[in-house]
Length: 407
Picture 1 (cartoon, rainbow, N blue to C red):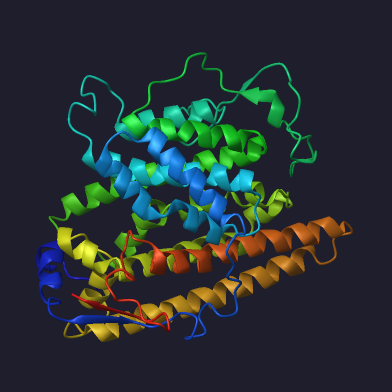
Picture 2: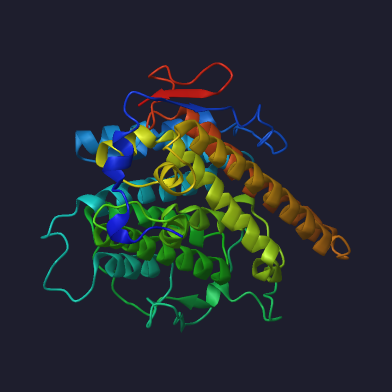
């Protein structure tokens, strides 16, 4: 049982014990954790770099924010995550990535004036209203329910084949748009980056996909607020693993990107699959993989601000004597279990459609699974390479892709 809050160590106390140590993280390929999954880089990577670079220069005014955005290497992330997508879809995805990274920084740094204290809405609620408008959805009331306004039909998107929803009705994508006649004001300066992302997405997706994406963005924004409140309420103490995952499932943003799989691969899979335990396992384990890799390899950054992560949690609750090597080994084994569960879930999803009379269903499910798996391997490859973490620049990344970080 975890100690009472008053007895828990603070994150600062846990991190203080790590100064002067070296964090060793093995290659996940050599450990046979990711070796059975595909790792590819899009052939459009070079051109995508040029486009993203121009978009950052055109959209970001402040030199420091512009430099920070370029360090993310958005093009590399998209090219690893979606290696078989068209350049057009990759550009749309790059806008989503651009928006979510800048939003995250803006939300943390918003001043009291930016939050508009005279308004009864929170920053995240205003962001959701802005997102809903550009996705062509009415903002929900209450937050968990959607209210889409029906208008006269327009031409269906040409890039997607006509299909039927799980309830047997025709695809209503082109029949529904937001009933809001006026664009809500962006909640932060660079929230406008969501607009070109949504424009590209709406041209090639269904209402179901838009609604699913909105739900994941809603989870992300609400979880981010919960994360801050939880840390503040705990007076900087280390949360338990259970407490941590309550909000971290949403703040990592992977659900947001996972539900773009159909759009990015230009396919449609049977919608009932999204209600299965196997699909739930895929998304949850993918999120866990991303969080573990992020929390371990960004530890120097977290230590600077005493922000809790899985390393601090393992050192507090899963190891004795604050043994860093043991804590990392436990997380590596967690990653191994994640890979096993994702592989098994994928196999069961294939079995579910194995007897489907339409061969395209099986083909599309295979493409969807490939896209989920390349998010996992691609995030790892991007994390090792991006300037955001600086592993290569600082000489911490070894030739065998193991990492040694002085703390």
